[in-house]
Length: 269
Image (spheres, rainbow, N blue to C red):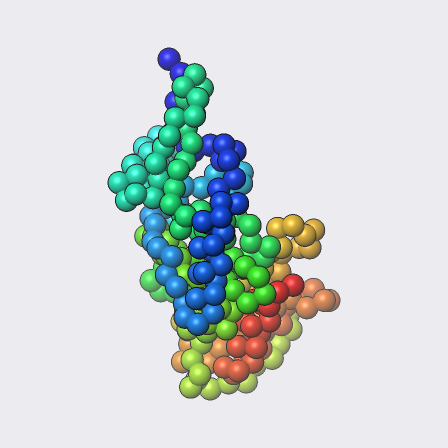
């Protein structure tokens, strides 16, 4: 009997070049310039069933990662079943001998996968609060459009396509940056060892209710991933970044400087 592989085969054709997919992408990008567009929600297991390992960039799968290998395999199979029931995937036989199948999906699914897979820049935001950890993964499309993948601690993924400025404001709100909060009086530069050792100078930063780690990666570039931190609470917002001499600078910032920083982070490289 053939060893049936229930994962779709990506090289049967290039659905991203389908005129209907291209037309829908252009339409959605144009509409998102006026208003953010929700592109759907998926579970961890659906995402794992939908993407192609080695081609699609890995993202946090918090619920799926709690399972052992056999449980995970079963969950991903159920994810494929769920996608099929929802009309988002139809598995068509490609090779009966090898047991491979071809994924047929509506254009909106290929648009979503294309935005994730072909992004020239990716920004990952990891938020830690008393309620746990969650994430936003941002995928750039052109100079002024970003796809945001909101990932909850329970393993649900919601996708929103929006203009850069709308994405900036959504990220700041998610990070707890309050336009009415005071500007903290702090500006220190410390070596990494002192930061890791929780230097007393950083006590005000440690009192923040929301801590967000930001990283930006250019997959096609040899440039190293850049990391930043945003820490927010009733006392205001602190921004951290590594400077050229290797020291980490923590500085209290107001709403407008933080918005300028996040806007620059999401600007086309």
